[in-house]
Image (cartoon, rainbow, N blue to C red; front, side, top):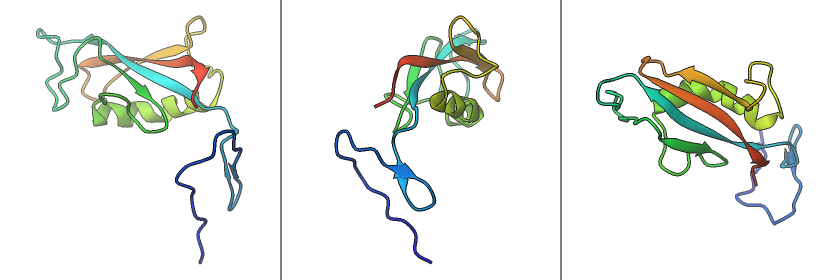
Length: 122
C-alpha cells in the first residue's frame, strides 16, 4: 500500500488540501494561547515535573508548544478542546465575550486559560 508523501514545506501562498491522498492548508487555523492563570500551592509553583508557574504563557501553533512549552500532562488534557478552537471561529463552551475557556490540569494544581488569538495562524 502506497502512502501519500507529505511535503516538508510549502511555497508561500500555496493552497494544498488532504482529501484522501491530497493535503490542504486552506482551512482555518488559529493560534491558541495557554496561560497558567492560577497555581494552587503555597509557592505558586506546581509540584509536578514541569514546575508550572502562575503567569506562564505558551502558544499552540504549527509546532507545539511555542516557545517554552507546557506540562505534557496538562497539554494532553487541553489538546482536544484547543484543537477544536484552532480549527473554528467559535465553540459553544467558550466564554462568549473573550473567546476562551478555563480548565484545570489533571493534578488539580493549575488552572489554564485557553484562548484563541485574534489573528489566524500562518
